[in-house]
Picture 1 (spheres, rainbow, N blue to C red):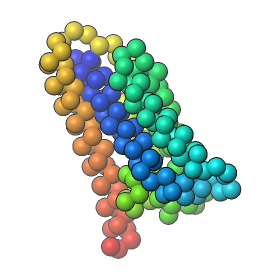
Picture 2: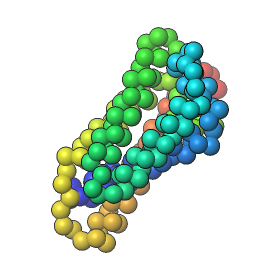
Picture 3: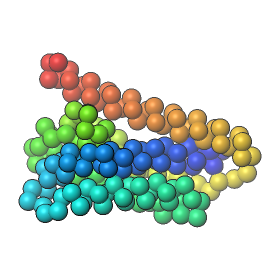
Length: 174
């Protein structure tokens, strides 16, 4: 059974990192402004946006290859924890009104402790997947069940994003 979970978690993380990379490539100016908000005075912000997008895209490719999956899962956990730490620093500094950028430029979700928790949970999933060793279950059954796990995790992630957004709107009286 763990192989289904590993492949499902991997599928979820491929989606998450792929979407994150895609957002940065599609809206580098938005993410440049976001990064400038996190690091005022930082030079070459646009280069950093592209570097992050390439890094996240690289994680996606490495997740797809069995030989590089374990280090890619570790890299995925690392970047998720780094983003969580950056959000925590901003919140502690009193900059809660800054947008997180997690769901792309169209989202108005601001920094929130729940986003930090969500990132930590996603990082934990990634690290748990490194520990499991896939076993034989048959490629068709494994693939179908893994897609189901990945789909479930994607839906849960999107539900969390929407719940956080709704809570923020309600607290602003919208």
